[in-house]
Length: 234
Image (cartoon, rainbow, N blue to C red):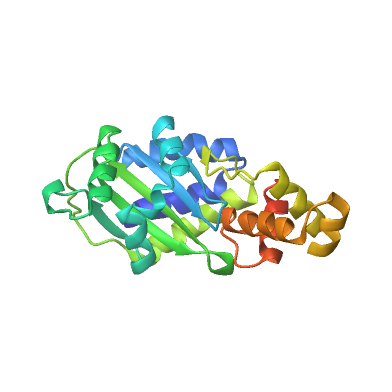
């Protein structure tokens, strides 16, 4: 795999456009004996994928927030180094949710693979997964950790540079009242001012802003406002 990671570095460096990078990745993945790949950029709320997984699986994975169940994502966060994985025997998995997740992934031909997580800006994480429909995976040599991290870091930088269009993204929806109150907050209005402007009670404004903050998984109103603005929800 050391040679393969070098090829990924070369590809990420030489690709002149987002389209050329995306076009070349599937062939490079198959060269290593895998069927598909998934680059996952994990951020609060704004999580998205660039992948050639089946479109139906990508949509289901993000819309149902399977990251909270996916053992590979959990292992990536815990290890923060390249590792191989396999679904294994469903009877050995205690969690009903994880068993169901493995069954669904298997239905789409995702049964084993290699994942390489990296730390990105502001404490976030991105990861590249190479997936196979084989029930188990046997690597001839250990994964070159340094080569893996360097390759995925450069791929991440290239996709960020091109502001790559996701093949799937987790969608967040705000109610009209939540968006309205957040918009006024972004304009610098206090909750009492918003209540006066919109003819609401202070408690109602607080209710909508608090629910908007929860929907955006934000720790504060300021963060919720910033996220909603970034995601063009307001």
